[in-house]
Length: 39
Image (cartoon, rainbow, N blue to C red; front, top):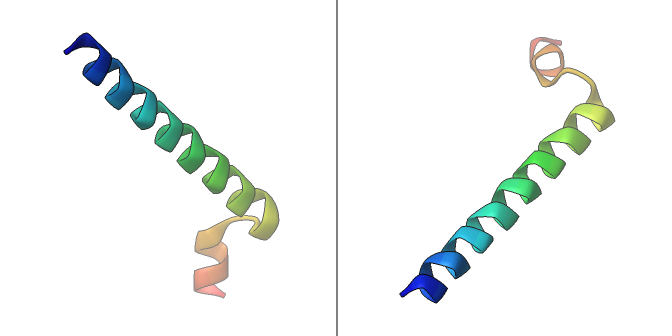
């Protein structure tokens, strides 16, 4: 059971890191997304 929980937590952590990196690169690439939407 502990192995299952640890595995789930690791996957969650990987997804979280992936999302943070993705958002970081989006902000670096395009500047402020709200400014792009507003024109």
